[in-house]
Every structure is written in structure tokens, then in C-alpha cells.
Amino acid sequence: MAIIDNIVVHHVMTKILASFRMLLAGALACIAFGAHAQLSIEITGAGASRFPVIIPVFENESSLPRGISDVVRADLERSGLFSLVDIGPLPLPESRVPDLAAMRGRGADAVLSASLLPQSDGRYEVRFRLFDTQKQVELGAMSLRMAPAQNRLTGHRIADFVYEKLTGLPGYFATRIAYVVKSGARYELQIADADGMNAQAALVSREPIISPAWSPNGQRLAYVSFEAKKPIIYIHTLATGQRQVVANFKGSNSAPTWSPDGGQLAVVLTKDGQSQLYVLNADGSGVHRLASSAGIDTEPAWSPDGQWIYFTSDRGGSPQIYRIPASGGNAQRVTFEGSYNVTPRPSADGKLLAFITRSNGKFQVAVNDLASRQTTILTDSARDESPSFAPNGRMILYATETGGRGVLAAVSSDGRVKQRLSVQAADVREPAWGPLQR
Amino acid sequence: MKKLLLPALLSALLAACSSTGTDATGAKVEDRTGAGAGVATVTTPGMSGSGIAALTDPNNILSKRSVYFDYDSFVIKSEGKALIEAHARFLVQNPQMKVLLQGNTDERGSREYNLALGQKRADAVRQALSLLGAKESQIESVSLGEEKPRCTDASEACYAQNRRGDILYSGEF
Image (cartoon, rainbow over the protein chains, first blue to last red):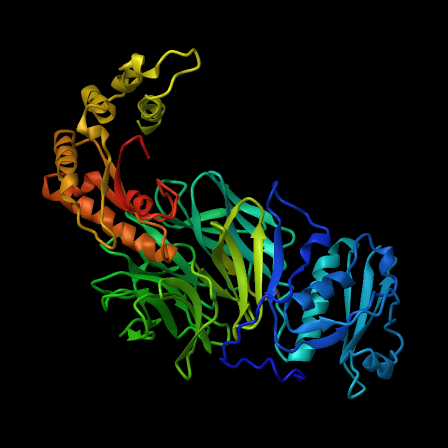
């Protein structure tokens, strides 16, 4: 049950001045890949009213090599939906109901109690409960087992639990993101946790890498690599590093996107002329043409129900977004305002479509409510690209430019919460938010 | 064949590229005219030695490999025509040679849409070569989109250098 009503997605653009800026990542331990690979996240705008919660130090937390409650706090704070009420270093053990009236007196509307129970095998059981201080009721309880080194993942899962209990939407903290870092002539396809930590390179190349796309199970990425001096589509299994060429036809091969069941890819090929849409099996077999147009068709994206494929086409004279039945048929135009609307990306519930629109010469992230067909521009930057929804549809990750350098940024789908993720001294681009881990 | 040719061509290209500089001993690189271009390439089976030298000789139009386009345009400009004609003639006379045509765009807008626009530029070059007698089997047209800019400033002069089609011969890709 959602007890925060004011975050229901409604398409009112509220500009939040960067009235507060908080550098979250600096104090956190990190496993850096390479010299400058660590993403740091800066909050540049937050929800107008944030929900006050207490996330205390966990009972026995000092026995862990690295903390866990700070991971939970950083996740919740970064979402822009919560403010943290500090009660100092005293834990609130999970075995006792906290003094909810006193916690309410400190300004908190919800409070977590949490304990770590060391197990004989060196692991820990993490037990936690969430309470509503106004209604004086327990909202839920959970127990997780973890090795001491799994403090971050476990913290993300606890933050997901708190987020879901308080907003009614699934959390997205225990997810991963993919992006490309360019430093000099070196390109790295990196995978990091959604908070930018634990960045690891899946691919290092002297040639560009673009358009990473997560398989629905989160285990593989499809992408375009130019390592052979031309764009070729690969599928890369992250755990093993195994790579497979899935499309290397004469001409260019690009813009891979997975079907919701993970069995097929929609791609763009030029083997028969201009850039056109094709569908093939995830092993590269069974290629067939999806649509034919006299112009450019590119950037396909499946609707989550598998019924439609959204794409960019200039068949009407300027690049606009269209959709076509995934089984083929007639295309319908989706965007009508402006002369440049590209990169359609539907939310997981199929209700919203994020895309890039050019408005007064600026390329900006916009979102279209597919039911009401109303479009809202969410950013005020000028060089936005590659929007990608968090699995719960609340946040949109995208690439933009600050000071001539590529950075990643995220904006909530109501435009209120804004974050920037950057890597020092490198260009970051082509982000893709991965699915919920099962 | 490719493997044999590649190092030779690379050194030839490097020699051509660095002709304004000096080498480690302080001697002017341009004094070594022909040394780079002649390296090993003539020994490659099936290749016409004079043909390869022509491709890298700075005085030969065949060493020029880029044609430029106007903003949002896919029409080869008149100043590119002589270059296209020379390469078409070379391909007709050397039917064993193949080319990779790489289309490029400036950096504004979506990477994938720009990839599609770059393909239109590569295709314009392909069609021109084809009309002038080169065989389709000799030509592959691909796009690098905005990914390999020759110039990285955010200025019109720079964008103009990036709106181009490049011609690469066997062994160069």
C-alpha cells in the first residue's frame, strides 16, 4: 500500500532549482575499475515534499568490514523521495518495537528496525522491520542472508523493500546499468550497480561501442561494436565474457533491441539498401524484414506486452516516432509536435514513452503518456541522448553533456527529481538501465 | 592476403601522414620519399604494385580519400567529383581491389539516427562509383555515424569536416 500520495506520476513539469547539492558517493567505499572509472552521483533536484524516514545503524553492524545502513540511506536519499532523520549511532534492534511516538516526535513518518545475526558459517542473517509512526503499525518485515562482502547488494535490497512499502512501486536500487566510457582512444563498455558503484568493464576496445541493450533476464547485453571498422551486432554474456556475432551482413548492422521474452532481436540492417527494420532470433538465425519504407527506419523498441515495435523514421520528411505491430503491418505515427523526435523507449508498464525531442535547437528528454498522448519535456539541457527507464518507470537515465564532456543523468518521469552521474576525466555515454534482478 | 598487406600499407600510410614532421634521428621524413610507399606491398601476390603506390602517393589524387557533404545533405559536392572518378577508374582497372566506404556525420542528434544518415552518405559514394563502372562486389558501404569525428570542436567548420565519406581499400580495414 502506498502511503506517499504526492509522488503519483502526474505530468506537471516542476522545475526544482538546484537548491541543495549533495555529494553522496565520496564517502562510500568503492571498487574502481581503471583510473577514472568510478561514477559519482550528484543530486541536482528533488521532489517538492520528501518523506521523512529513520534508517538507524543496524544492531551488530560494526562487526561487518563495511557498512550496510549507509548503503540503504544513500539509495533512499538519492531517489529524491525521502529525507533521512538522523538519530545518531544508536541501533534500533529488530527484536523490539521502537518507541514510535518518540520517533514521530523527531519528525519521522516511518522507521526501520534492523539487526545482523552472525551465523556459524561466517555469514549473517539480516532481519528488519518497517513501521509507520503515524498509524503506529508495522508495514512489513523481512530477513536476508548475506556474506560480509555482500553488504552493498543487501543494502540495495533493503532499500528496495523500504521504497516499495512506502511508495507502492517496486524499488530499483538492486539493479545494474550499462554505459560506455571513452577516454582518449579507449572505449569501455562498463557495467555498474545502479548507484554507480562496482563498475566493471565488460568490453575494452580501440573502436567505438554503441547501443547496449539488456536481455530481459539481465544476463546478456546486445550492442554495436566498430572493432571491425564497420558496425556489427554482438551478444555478450556478462558472467562468462562470451561474445557472439548475431548480425554481420553487408553494410551496417545496428540498433539491437530484445523482444520481451528474450528470444528475438529487432535490429537495423542496410543489406537491402537504406537503414530498415529486421527481426532475427537471438542466435542470429531466421532474419526477416519487419517493415519497408522509402526512408530511414531505426531505433526499434518492443512494447513490454510484445505487441508493438516503436521506432524512428523519416518517412514523413522529418524524424518522428512510429509504431508497427511486432508481427508486421501498417505503421502508425506516434509523435506529431516538432521536427525531430527520436529514440523511443517505453516504460515497463507500457504506459509511458520516453524519447528525445528537439525544441528550440536543444535536444531534450521528453515523455509521452500513451493514453492521453500528452508530451512533457523533462529536462532543460541541450544535448540529451539515449533515454532508458528504470524498471519501475519512475526514473529515466540518459546521456547529456556538461562542460563539453559526456555525463550520465537521471530524471524522474514527473521531471521533479534530477541526478547527475559522471566519471572524472572521461566521456560517458550510451546508458542502458538493466532489468530487476530475479 | 590481407594479413600480408596490412603492415606494409600501415607503414606506408604512417609515412604519408607524418610527412611534415621529423623522425627520431632528426632527418626530415619527406626526404625518404618512396621508402614508405614501396615497403613490401609490391611483393603481395595478386596485387598491382603501381596501383598500391598510387593509392598512397600524395601527388596522386587516389591518395585523397574523403568526399564532403553539406548539412543534412547526401549529394556529393562538385569538388568531390574528380576524386570519385579517379577511384572508379582505379576500381575498374583493378577488379581484384575492394573498397569499404564509411559514411560519417556531425555529432548533433541521436547516435543511431546519425548512423542511418552516415549510411546515406556512404551509399551516395557507392552509387557514384557504381555508375562509373565499379562492380557492386567490389564495394561495401557502411556507416560510422558520429562515432569517428575528424574534428571535435563544436563549431560549424568542424562539423563540416565530419560530414564526409571515406574510401578505404583492401588491407586498410
